[in-house]
Image (cartoon, rainbow, N blue to C red; front, side, top):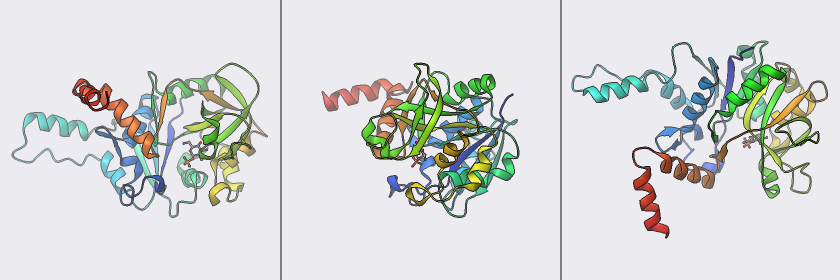
Length: 288
Ligand code: G1P
């Protein structure tokens, strides 16, 4: 079954990225020339999702404006190449794909944000994408996961090996023993200390959920960081149904973090067809 709905929680404070995120959502920060949220949206569209649900907060108007067809092609002095570019920019979202914007009054955590989308999600399975986790991969990670979902019909969360001292930044998982890249989840804890972390695998911002996760989200109270944590609902659901941890193929950049963001910009700039070589020459001159 093709899953149609994908939730983009975009109402966070972006406090790790202040002052840039004081008036601009962190998801609008560009990697080279494209905002993070557009990379995430393109990944979802490429994976076949057709209903994009944005859970937005008070500084998030720019996200809607970004995806609206808002560039005026009728101005008198517009040149043909510019017209073509503007037209392209007005069609980032293909016609068969729809966008829905929901306001999250207060940023009370990732779990709370997802719950705001419940009336739109209805009784279907759905995906969640955290746009500040940018993943460079041959095949989009959401596509990799959607294919796996079709085979298993079970929730899947994406994970990667991390440095254990960074456990305090992630949902950290425990799984059944196995060498394969898809393992049954047996435990999960949000941002534990290095000592309390069950493994060195951390959750990355791509999830596909069976609809039941919403009922569990409704029952949890404030957890780590005094927020309604998605992790706590996952912890509950694994007592009733299988959830799989998927070690994806691709390189992930934590763009909610200044260093991660700068690394992503350098890597994507180096790959840029137009000026990648010139940028490399510049970097060599600078550092060698
Ligand atoms: C969220 C989740 C966490 C996950 C992380 C991935 O945390 O709560 O479990 O590991 O995203 O980026 P946040 O980064 O929003 O604090």
